[in-house]
Length: 134
View (cartoon, rainbow, N blue to C red):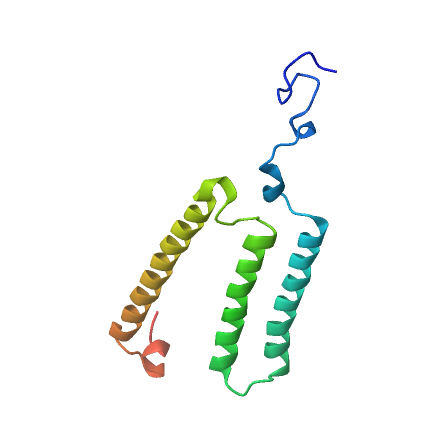
């Protein structure tokens, strides 16, 4: 036994040897990891099947469904593998995630906007004009 106070570490006892009351929420169980894994496999197989089988006639609807399932899969990964929720680390991890999503959304929207305007404002080239280019 250690002569130190309970909860204090000695050089011979690793940090994980002590249990802390808040640690249980930060680590997943085998059941939660398996649930996340099974959901991830299902959420990967469905879009693969949609695209490869051509189950839907509309390519736009297929693309929207694939992207929607991708968003659901991101949520599954964040919850089951990253263990991110409003209670973890006082809510700071969730705030960081929201900030990241906002910044990525601004960057993507701005990039798409710039590319759209470049496409619409460029001089159209015919096939003949492209043949004569150096």
